Image 1 (cartoon, rainbow, N blue to C red):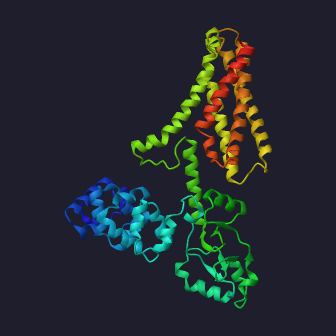
Image 2 (cartoon, one colour; image 1 turned 180 degrees about the vertical axis):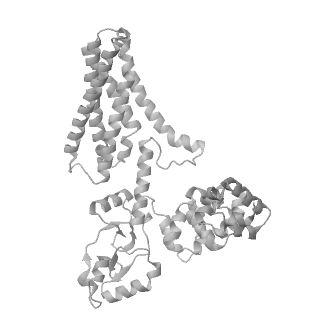
Image 3 (cartoon, one colour; image 1 turned 90 degrees about the vertical axis):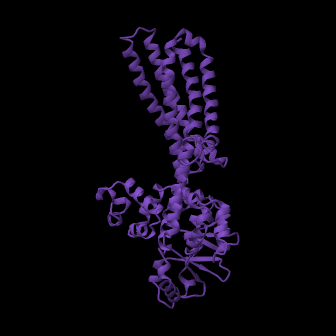
Length: 468
């Protein structure tokens, strides 16, 4: 394959249109790297997008990827570093590439450099920023808890002095136009950087140039402390319907601002964390975890599920005589357990979503619980009725004792089981939040196992009354 075909073959993302396989491109570039053909390699990737170069990096062997990074011009290297998956940074971050990484970081402003540094091993990141123009600010940022507001804020914030005029603010905006991605709010500060108010674009456009900022600013803007949990920041933004929030220190001095981009990132992180917790996984788990880390992060949840299953098994064992007398009851245990688990997860998921939108005990909790309870009874009655009809239908083909009583047992027990599971699912997330725990842990193993226990207990209790 000719180098010009590789260079103009629409890059890695366009290989299908070019009729060339991605693997073939990677192997060709890899061969050139090993042959020391620096010019040819750079000519090939020169017209590619950073994401395409990243795809090449992922396909290369570590040694070849490291050598390619050393060859790349700074502007290309910065683009690739910005696209690089966080978990792959450490693969290339070795002694041979340390100086290259440092040079790339030095070309970025603190807001762009911090997300990249934050994903590197802590000690390595501190070494990389040694001598950086903003070393002190970056060092402080790297010490911040990643779940706090300060870890997500942008430090380059547009501000206006309390003594300035509209014309002066507009002139400042024009002078810094190239560095402003999106102007949401302008924070009004005093000489000590204490936040006094905020200006919006409309405030500036509708006011004469000579108007003092103090006359048109909106006092008491929404601010959060630097150590505010990111989940609380997101909840506040949704509640107040705002797209940016100022971050301040204990003395209300402006530190930065969380913009729409950061809010979206927080939302993604919270959704991923809840998804992992609901699946019974550690929130820091990744697909790159090694066997030992996988065991350490998953085994506690598995053991927790084992405890719940053991309790359910002991409940079933306590009804050994009932099972001996009517073995057919064992056939309905999976039905009861699956129904209870599904109903509980559905109810708890809705409660977690409600908590995410700011619903509290003092809000519409009781009406919400009532709605879940009523819906659970209705769903349970329908499912129980379906199972009861199936039992009666099966009795025409299979001979077993008292089909009518067994059908009634299924109807009543499944109705009660879904009612209890729905109530637990709706209640437990609110209870966990009251104890300052993440409500997402209510789902998955916790809800499923607890409902298994109560589901089996209810089923055998009803069976003892109506069937045995």
